[in-house]
Image 1 (spheres, rainbow, N blue to C red):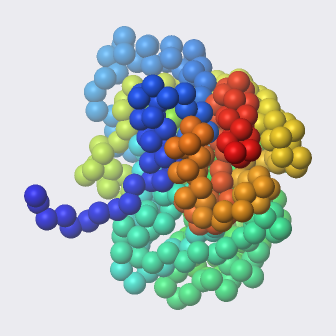
Image 2 (image 1 turned 180 degrees about the horizontal axis):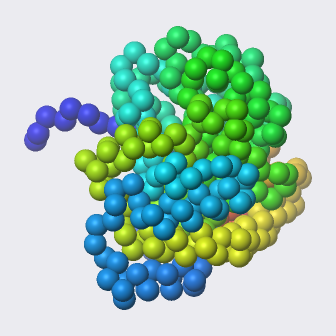
Image 3 (image 1 turned 135 degrees about the horizontal axis):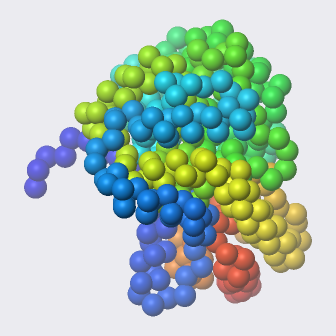
Length: 384
Ligand code: PLP
């Protein structure tokens, strides 16, 4: 066996999803509420865009920063939707939003540095930072505070070693959405302390209640902000692997160089499909969003019927629910989720994966019948 020099833990959501898929393949009826994606077909217009690319020979290497048509249509969409002012030069195409985040960490962090994340956080943030040798600093939030940080909490967490903050709005797994004033105050602190504010906005199109504000829409902070976007969630295109980074053109060129020596950029066919998606963005996002809102409401309703409490989320694809609200005494969410998958065939993600104990995440990306059946199976299990 070769000596292993670098080993990182697998993503816990991918892990639990794989376990659920494995159980299914063994013939079990598994209710999988762990996946982080809208389970609906990619829109026919996008499929047509990909077919057209295939038929017209767009099957070769693309420029490493992304095809100009995608850089232009994606920045045009951001500017139209969220009042930003990005040019095509300030737009980089990556292999999903995840590689954009990876490239930023790889470029901006090293041993001795710190990156701030906000708990509950998306499962990959700690590893993305730690892979560079930098340290993770976690700011904890609570359900009582609406799962949001205050400017004072941010100020206190920043040290002379802090280089970046990962800000996830709208948030996976809590669904929290920050207001314009709240973002302004956080940006003020980040600028004052010279910390790069990386705003992960991959769920921006799946906002059901309240207004979504992009951190990229404040001209006075433009040098301190990088925005991450993706076609994965609001276009239901997770498998196409197209993400975007918006920000300072010089920084993006450096990230592009990293791509040129690593991934060479994402699939050319996917990039052309994404151009079609952005050209028809309003129509496609509305259809995904409306369907996901129906599913969110269906999950909220059945949970309320069974557990007598209202659970909801203003955005995204998830409900983060406390075990206590499910009448469960266990606080080790990982142990509980494993038991529930083994014994009730329901796959949920433990709160511990997001840095918060005694909570579990239900995804409502699945179709309504699956959501209802999952909750019913869970209730039967809890009666035992
Ligand atoms: N950021 C957050 C908060 C996510 O939940 C995800 C995916 O689950 C991503 C980024 C990465 O998405 P993708 O790489 O599919 O664009």
